[in-house]
Image (cartoon, rainbow, N blue to C red; front, top):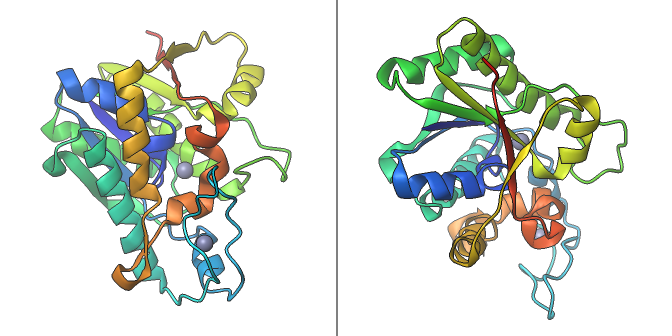
Length: 254
Ligand SMILES: [Zn+2]
Ligand SMILES: [Zn+2]
């Protein structure tokens, strides 16, 4: 089972439970398909302004103080890659099965063609794999005030779904499962009312693992160049905040 994910945090936000559950019974691989370099968190961390993150309840904060950290684009990519690898491993994926596509896209520029190419490359060594990736449903986000709104964000997600769909329709993928970003589920349902999304619902044990795995995205240790990038970038989308721990999926129809 191979999960193709757009950015460093989507493995948790969109596929976390699916990866965790599949890891118990399957050989699971996760492939990162962009470099995540455009995320504005890099600028925020160097802005000199106070941290804008809300408390995590009971007065718990990721950190206090101002954002005074100069981080180059290359370093930022590496920091995010570290969060990605740790997150996958805490979800139960073997370290050797966590991949960064050598031809990954620069953030915001993933096309369906490149997505197909990346998927095809991995399937050449894992030909019987079940492919799991984002839904190919196009639904522009009209509300710039919506949590997680970003044009960049959305186009990479959509490109992955379409890249997989093209391969599936030409018979190069035997089984394809699409996962909807849970925080946009209603948008997807509005755009494609005929699709019957299924929910994966975590049991108590899985919930415990998911809570622990989120720590990969909240590590704040500037002396070790750990900056909780995903949490700064997308905390409103995390299940700890939305309250929705489910994953949502449907199978590509024959
Ligand atoms: Zn993303
Ligand atoms: Zn901060």
